[in-house]
Length: 134
Image (cartoon, rainbow, N blue to C red; front, side):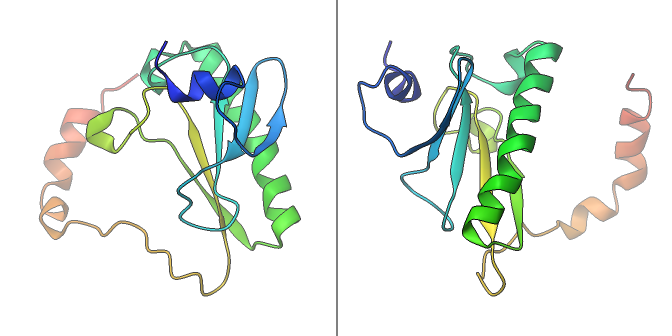
């Protein structure tokens, strides 16, 4: 398999692994947006979050929930962003599902995405399409 994350799991490619158990691996992103930017991945290859079943998705979220506060505490951060890009259109670069834990520090100058003014006018239309989701 040509998945770079699978190669990290198999120790074919070195990584700065901060956590490992039988199901998950967490390692520092080689292109961090902030100090301590960590990726949490399942050891089983699954391309996107949408392909996980409910149990896998919940378990992966629990692992990120466990690791994020420990990363924040170890680095003296004040908070964190938890991000998952699902599919290339959403910015997913590696086709192996992964959470980003990005520690946040006062004055780190990281910006969140801007809101779209034109979407404000479409809130009622959007709501009518989504309100029946079960």
